[in-house]
Image (cartoon, rainbow, N blue to C red):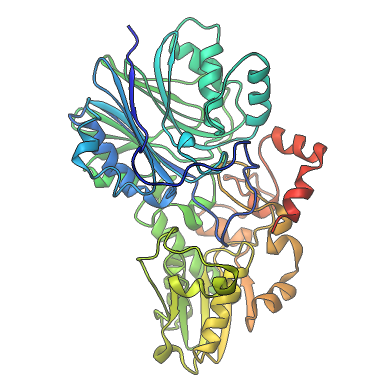
Length: 507
């Protein structure tokens, strides 16, 4: 018989009720000037107290999504779920919660909303009882045809409980005419466009898969006889698991009592993993595409120094994401690396919601200039990216007010000229600084003495690969080049409806 789901969705947390209902455009302007992580997934098969291992894995993946977290487990008879707004710590370090998540297999998810409102009903993993049994899914990525699929499903009678694109997958599985859950799942995958790395939980075991282009990462590890899936290798390290391999683009891996087997239901394509994993998203102690994220970022900094070196007294990172690139720049340029900006690690997203009168002070909640160090110095300021440029303006101004003589901003990625539609929360193109201004105009807007970005060829050289110019790219670099590797069905529909102009005009 199908197992019932026992759901404790954060009741009694004192959180504000959800707001909004309609599915917002996934790339509507956010509250600050950073790319936001896409989400993190983790799954375990064959471990006593599997949910505890999942909680540890999610803690290691916290940087990928900080709005909410959830775990679904299966104990051989029933599915159990707990989902809550906020971080893993505080929600999944409580014995009363973990005692309600028994079983030797479980999946979990850290969320940053790229589609759907920031609301409890959108927190993953999502779970449903289907005709072929219980099914839970955790999704990292973004379906670029989710709106079209959702509209078609609703016309056929589907009733959606969330505004997340992930729920489309559940409805596609539920309405498939295929005989088994696995067959239905593969049938559903063939209707999807865009990016997905999925870890799913059934009564029999786990299913893990990536889209045919492999936009978002997903790795496979072992802990004794147990099998583990995670968005990054660092999550395997935290639970003491051994990295086995990446889940290949387009691959479907099934883990159950019979062992591990693999299917490849899609025609082979040239993979296009997200290049921004190397620039910003992944933790420095992770590996991606077989490369050390930390070492790649140092090489990025060295390339930046060779391409756009400038005389200076010290190299200063924008902490923490700019630190490895700043180290590489300093070593290549022979200029001292110094912590000219100190970051507070105790400021969360919900620490303060200032009114307009004090909003400009917000940057100093997170960053403060090391005045005694930088006074009367020429600085090379290293940041990983520039999105709207508003944070860069504040940081450059802060350094000048602290006495810096010169501030030369060097950016460890090419100019971001296009929005991402594959699971990264970026503004609409009209809000991207590099899409609206040339280099000199951006420099003047930011207030730096000079400004330079890493070239797209330099980024590929840091990856140890041929230059982008004239070569078929090995990664998705659409945010820098506008060369989207898939059709953007929903984006095309929004353009036809004229809704993008409304989003661009939003504050």
